[in-house]
Image (cartoon, rainbow, N blue to C red; front, side, top):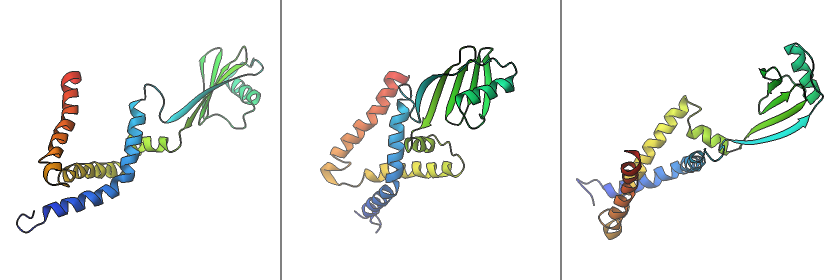
Length: 188
């Protein structure tokens, strides 16, 4: 159907197809990350967390620099921590890039917490949550506009009883009822 000589349906289908191809990778990244982040109460979608326990000789040094040096030496660490902290007189925390050492000074018991990024999923989550800021904000905005265009042009891909004036219209209405109904029941 052409209105005023412009083939709107053909342009709509072409836009839908081409924008869809451009948006596939971002759609998959946002969808996978979205599912992961939705369940943040059940697990950490960005980091794999683990705990290990070791015992070293008790640390009896008295000054903070001596205590930190003794802990590093007894744990066999080769680099200084990013920072250290005494949460109480008996406990020293050593902070490294992906590990934290909780050292019980009088007993030498050490809990090692590891927070290792979940490769690929970590990066997807960083993009999804816009941790990069700067240019990524504009890329994400353009992607949002692309999704709007995909939704609108997708309404007009099919004609007739399977299109928006038939089955497609009913499915579109049902799809709209899901967020509206949820809002009405749970968020008002």
